[in-house]
Length: 423
Image 1 (cartoon, one colour):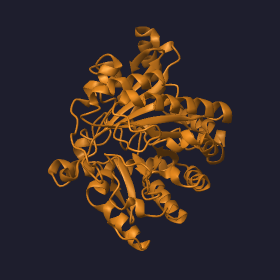
Image 2 (image 1 turned 30 degrees about the vertical axis):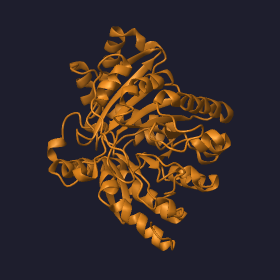
Image 3 (image 1 turned 90 degrees about the vertical axis):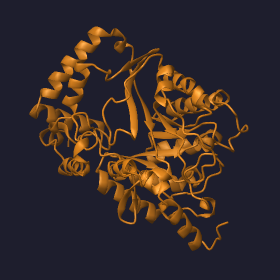
């Protein structure tokens, strides 16, 4: 298989799915630094797998009545996973989410995660993490029996119901974050498997001043946390607090200690995502793409060129992925030669890159309020959405699903089928 991958690196489905995504983007978003439809076919998510949640957060995208629903039958979850693969192709990243999926029996969640991996997708379990902390063996089984190698834990002051009470400040939650990082390290050691996490945070006007401390915590724990996902408060679902925060990226930069570029590359609509790809080198943070750097912009353009369009090293054995990459580069060595030149120049200018660099991404995902969806801007953003779910045979934007009434309608359907009454 290695030699076949080297000789035949192109996977027709991979290139076809990337092209379909690219062609679906509005023409004005076909910019040289657009990564959607080139290096990524987006991100997908399940819904309804376990709509219930044992928290009562003040910011929640679930619909009223969610806690009256039952777990979704496996066959329906599998249909969603199949639809996500058909839309994004093999190697795509999907979120296993709903309400709190770790309320499922471990065997049930193992079956879902394993099915996604067997389909060639990269599943990430989304959780508040409380069950993992209470029952470390639950996470261990997911790693050993389902092949889970990543999960996302959500911790912030909007949550209600966490063990130890409901802190008023993010500082009081640092012990929970420390416990999650330690759990990842212990689980790696015990299982001998790769495991890392993303940390998601709902950002409100109240916890915005503490955001720099969260950024600094992630940098210190970059051996376990590879992504910090920030979600400014959106008025959808069961959210009962107000105050969409401003200056989120300014607080991110404060946590890093200096201004950093918020567009390593464009990902869908420019108003939806801000993100920086970084290397954490010891105590230092190095940007992959610096704002205003012609060298960095030139190299990003190289990575976006057609010869590598749709390629990903995810979703298949590493040796096969590298064989395919080598096959691509043998046919078109320009990315390799330019990469050597780029790396050499960057190393000569910053020796800190030799300090055991760890990849780290900061992403601010600006979900829309429900009343934004029907505006011209809202429609343009939905059209270019990078984050979708499969609903009734169609791929639906997460913002439209949460804010446009689809989630509420689906929740009502499931409650009625279960014979329960919505209060």
